[in-house]
Length: 347
Image (cartoon, rainbow, N blue to C red; front, top):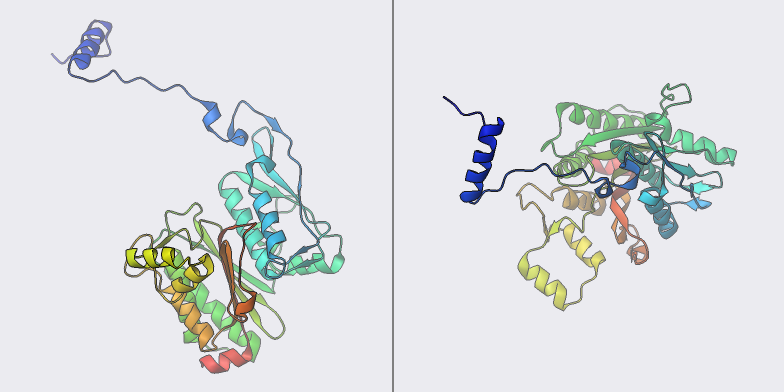
């Protein structure tokens, strides 16, 4: 007859026998609410945090330090409010008068990242009417809802696509969306509805390279395009670890960089010429960085900027590149432009 060790008469014998052969009886660990972030603690129902107030100018590429400070505050635990089960960060952009498309894309990526953690972002509009209209045109409302719970109307001047990471390859749907976006850009700038294989290749390689990072904190990259009168602004934004924290430098390069006191901006530039591998050591990794730099070098894209960790690179003017000593960007932003002139070079 099979013994039922849950019965009292067998339980003592089983525990004693387990102890003799070096095994301890399993015990359920008590729930410790202090190990969770305060806003996730079910015993705390109300937390009032101060709103995060933006500066007048949050142009990421020109006012980098102030912008990064604003984004860092949005992601800090101390700025999370809680009412019952609802957790949120209160954002105040009423005084904003200047911003760029890069700053909007970073903000959208942060909104999405907070949402994945059960935290919503509440905010207002700038008092400046012109600035308010430009923010609406940027597409920031695409993933937000009005007071009635209905989605806002999609902006016609911006396309925003979220691409899943960790899926090992771009899906067929992602390929189609990227191809359609490239065709739309060409038609916007030239009036002709045609493909642009060289630009499409850059996008597929940089997006394909980025979706493999399953170990990063968040699970999506944001691919954005802003349609201006004479150009299209492209951005690819991630609010995960950042390039410098995922590089796998070969031992000899690591030694040489240490002895030569190489700065992080020089190490990042090395990544764009495929000097370093990725942290996963896979052969197909890190194709995107050299591809986007090559596109900049031969003129398919222009005004390429890269912000990651404590570095901002300006490929259009290297004298503007700098180390961000005071503030660090937890993530990566690629930003470049396409014009009718660059399209003619790529055709």
